Every structure is written in structure tokens, then in C-alpha cells.
Image (cartoon, rainbow, N blue to C red):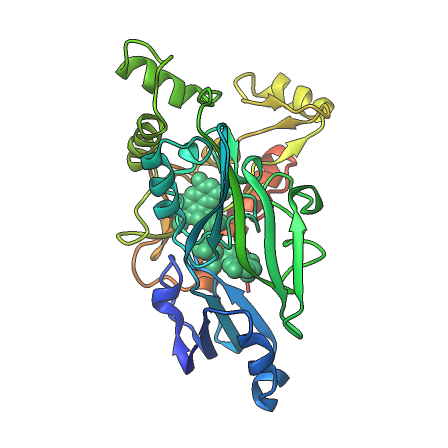
Amino acid sequence: MNIYANYDLKNQNTFHFSVKARFFIEVRHASAIPTLRQDALLSSLPWQVIGNGSNLVLDRDLDCVVIKCIYDEIHIVKEDADSVWLSVGSGCNWHDLVIYTVDKGWWGLENLALIPGTVGAAPVHNIGAYGTEVQDTITRIQSFDLRDGARIELRRNECNFAYRSSIFTQALANRVLIHRVTFRLRKQATPNLMNEVLNARLLDQYESIEHLTPRQVCDAVIAIRNKRIPDPDLLGSAGSFFKNPFISSTHYHSLQAQYPDIPGHKTPDGHIKVPAAWLIEQVDWKGKRIGDAGVYDKHALILVNYGKATGKEILALAEQIREDVINKFSIALEKEVVTI
Ligand SMILES: Cc1cc2nc3c(=O)[nH]c(=O)nc-3n(C[C@H](O)[C@H](O)[C@H](O)COP(=O)(O)OP(=O)(O)OC[C@H]3O[C@@H](n4cnc5c(N)ncnc54)[C@H](O)[C@@H]3O)c2cc1C
């Protein structure tokens, strides 16, 4: 276990905001929790779990204990002719896990390549991309109560997974440290090519998409993402800043009368999901900046730090965008990022 006092989190968040944590603690084993709880000062402060800080906006110094799990081992827990079950430490880098699995020829994570962050954070917001969500492959999650280190083990159907949310953003929000996640991956599968851009790229690249490998799909995802999404090591961001909103079909049709090209995807419960990026483009924020806080010019959903922007400046920019979208479309964008 490593304990740092008054620690600058600049290299622990992908916006690269320089804010200090009163204590920053890296733990490997869950037994660290009851040990740390025995310390009166640490125990008197609020605790905040982070991973790689790729979905965070830090807008002030944190008078709390920031805790990060660095346990990153990968174990095969079960295997049959059809599938393999992997138990993965929450500190494992997400993209490294994806590459490990596609190189083995296992299906399930290939569409989620290049998403920054850790394995432990993946179920929290139920990360998703190119028609796949991580909930599709998770079978169980082992976590520990931050108050006393009691073990809490959940099966997939107990996690309340939904679009960018789970029990870890609801009832268990900041209550547990996720320590291990188990995934079921398939040895044979049909690629998920629901996403039109991914489908078109693969059709363009290969004569037949019938015999694709997970690695080929993964490489296509990487190529697409590299064109549209900034590398957080070069340009600070937290990926999509807002969630795509769901609106009623009545609301959608009234907007469609005014804006005939408004995109929308019908959901099974009858709502319409509208791409937040389109809404932001319509209020003319794409590519704009206020000081060092800006909207990425290749993707309107990504707010970026061009250098010295603070968390407060990024949040102020986000608020202006939100207001403009409400005024034009009567749609209230909700943040996908977490503000601590
Ligand atoms: C360039 C870029 C592209 C992105 N693209 C995508 C994308 O395509 N799809 C997508 O879904 N997301 C995307 N994201 C968002 C981000 O990568 C994910 O949300 C990722 O899962 C965050 O992981 P993290 O380890 O950085 O978590 P953090 O940002 O550190 O934390 C996120 C949340 O998870 C909680 N948490 C973290 N670790 C644990 C743990 N071990 N136990 C309990 N709680 C924990 C934190 O408390 C916090 O609430 C992108 C981000 C960037 C910067």
C-alpha cells in the first residue's frame, strides 16, 4: 500500500487538472480497508475511489482520502469448449485487457477497444461503444465496503445495468471498492457490427466479413477512434462529456417538424435517443473555445483542456452549452462525467 499526503492529482486524471488530494492511497488488497480504517484521521475524512480519472472533472482540492486499487492480475477461472471466464483485477488497464483477449481470439470486448481507464471503473458507468456495452460480458463483480471492508459480491443481474449507469452509480455510489470483475468471453461468435460506421469500415477493408477475427474488429475500432477522439495524453478530456438524451416520441416529432434532419434512434420502451453531439453542433459550439476550455473540433461531445483550463472553467463551458441546448430544443443534457 502507498500513502501520499497533499498529493497533486494532475497525472491521475485525463483532463490533467492540477488539484490536490489530502491523501492519495494506492491499495492492492482489500484487507487494506480495515487497516486504514483503524487510523483515526483517515477514518474521519470522506473517501473517494478513483481509477485512471478518465471520467472525472476535478474542480477543487479534495479534502478527502482518494483511494485507487492497483491490483491488476488476470486469471482464467473456468473454461469450456464454448467460453472462457476471466477474473480481472480492477487496476488492470482496460485497453490492455481488450488487447489481451483479442490476441487470444476471444470475442466480447473487441468493440470496446481504446476506452481509457481501468477494469474496476468499467462496470460503474457500464462503458459502451460501437453497439456494445460491458454489461454484455460481465458475470460477477467482487467489491468491498469502504466502511469496514466487508465483501460484497454481485452477479450481473444484481448490478442494475442501464445506459451509462449501474448499482455503482446508484445505491452503491462511492460505497464500495470494486476489486475484481469476472467476464465471460466466447471462443466463437458473430461480430457485433450493429454500428454503421464500424460495419462500413470492415466491409470496405475485407472481401468478406464472415470470417473476421476479434483482432480485426478491434483494429477497425482503434482506427475509427483514432480519427475522431483525442488521445488524452496529448489533449486533456474525459471523452463524452454529456450522455445522449432520451426524449418522448411526441417531443421528438415536434422537433422533427422544425428540424427535419434531427437524428434519433427508437428505444424498446418507445423513447427516442438523440445524439448529444448533434444538438451541440446545432447550437454552434463545435470547435469553439473560451480560453483553454474548448469543444473538440472533430467531435462536439468532447470538451477539451487546451492547456491550463481548470475544472471550474470546463464546468462553466458545459453549463453554457447545456443552457443553449435547453433554449433551442427543450432538452436538458445530463453530464456523463463525474464531478467530485
Ligand atoms: C478520450 C476518452 C474516450 C472515452 N471513450 C469512452 C467510450 O467510448 N465509452 C465510454 O463508456 N466511456 C468512455 N470514456 C470515459 C471513461 O474512459 C470511462 O468512464 C472509464 O470507465 C473510466 O475509467 P477510470 O478508471 O478512468 O475511472 P475514473 O474516471 O477514475 O472513475 C469513474 C467512476 O468510477 C468509479 N470507480 C473507479 N474505479 C473504481 C473501483 N475500483 N471501484 C469502485 N468505483 C470505482 C469512480 O468513483 C468514479 O465514479 C472515455 C474517456 C476518454 C478520456
